Image (tube, rainbow, N blue to C red; front, top):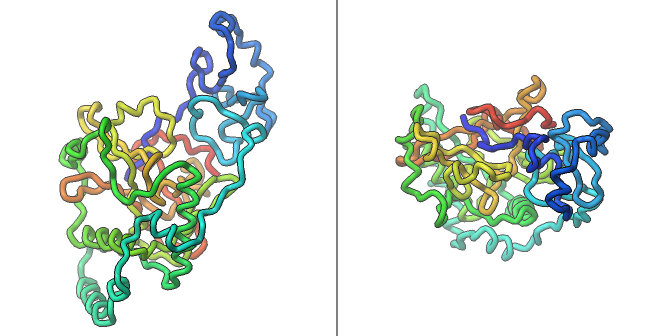
Length: 357
């Protein structure tokens, strides 16, 4: 199991660089140094009216009103970088939906154009697959399952458009693979053998299932998932048809970088990829610029029994051909319309989820 690897604690309010007391207005250095805590002693959250937990209070850089990170909707899990404006001052535009136009969607996701015969396997092919699956029921180990795309091509376009809308709104482009960018960690650094506690190897048949899922997506046979915008949770993911236990939901992807390069990064979606004895070699996945639907699957509040009951996806790291990969897999049968959640703290217990809804 893995978790998001993130420095989410708000800076110490006594620190002159405190992000929880953001003061980005133009002030002379001597004025900042002479500013006393009494200036904020009566600061309270505009949402809940409380001044408790001052380290988690943000000040709007325009109106100077305060807001708890966890009272904002959607909740902020970390103090934002740079200037921050409250909902009233941000003048946020309404979400622009991605055009439901096949050519635009095909181009956005770089769908491989192929013949009709290649898109749908014939009856004989499906029959052979079914017989192959039935032959292994006697084995104790349960195999991973490929997702089952919707048969309606128009519905698949709607699913893809919902993801394109979310990626566009967050300034990211679509990628369905780990990416290695110059100036970050090289691909040679991603060696599963370096994992200090060892890493389970993805069996050959499960690796073939993963490749099948990737190939289906390249052909536009999309997993039955819809990205929706919730006023409390932000972008989140719903099952658009029933999903069976042990179905591969998606791979967690993004730019691979050394954790040491991201110590002061305020992105809220970094994922642990590799933990080694030498901490300077630890790797994380950073989906802020390139990502897929995994970025929008939310975490549970693992501080409450109700939150833990919502978990229906597990996050597992595997050794795949010598490299570390992170898969999101259904941990039980998921109903149509049910939202997907997993435990951000399944591995390291350092992500603050106590205010998750």
